[in-house]
Length: 164
Length: 194
Image (cartoon, rainbow over all chains, first blue to last red; front, side, top):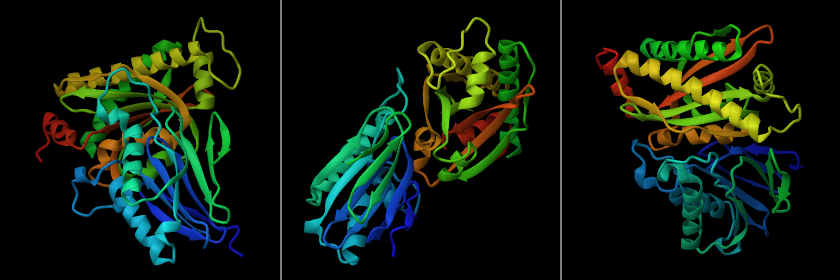
């Protein structure tokens, strides 16, 4: 019944879906599209992570989905609350590109790779294995997680669709 | 907001002149819009997150740092290239090295004139970095310009000036996204009390 359901995940946002619904986030550049999937109950979660660490957050309220170190525990909690078991979860990630090849520019220009590193570090901390990834490069990606199969499809302008 | 609109006006006015000299024909400019927008909505200005655009990006350094984009959709970029003398248009979907470098240089010239007129007007030192070009989804490209805002909140200040050229109404956008720290400097340089 839920096969056609499409749930959009915005920038610095996270959500979950189950039983064949599709989670989609569009236009990932240096951001990372992280997904967690529990194959037993067909529950998937997705976070569109913008920055590596919440330590630099300056505003009062913290948007957990925005940072690698806070998005992963938040998504994990949401999924376990909906019946997922942490031990069954595996992660797939995409994005973390470096969109522009700039001659100058310090750390903020390397944000894509830094996001990927931070996501991996956080996954390791929670003992979640990485099943597959499609990260880096110099191009944008639109990604979809099919919660029926756990297949993560990645579309880019130059390379078409890739499934991991 | 009026002050920031003036910032867009001054900068883009000069850039439009530079563009019309380059093309040898008149280029119109729309009144700049200044808005504080959620990240997602910025890409909507270009037709959505997934719209493929040609973007020349450069970082503004100096007293009031920020990010700057000169953005064209594919069709207008193609027409812009066709309008250049001495460049044989490839006519294919992809851009040749030469075409990309020509577009990059156009972006460089326009951004340079935008910034130098703004620097003259405000007395602030502002210089562009070497530009970089990308042809990709608008959302993926704009991510980049919003990182400085990412640490503050979920909105960014955008000064958007659209260009129109000739009967084809070739449309291009100039996005200036000052870093959050730069607002105060821009305001005080323009004589606005905070």
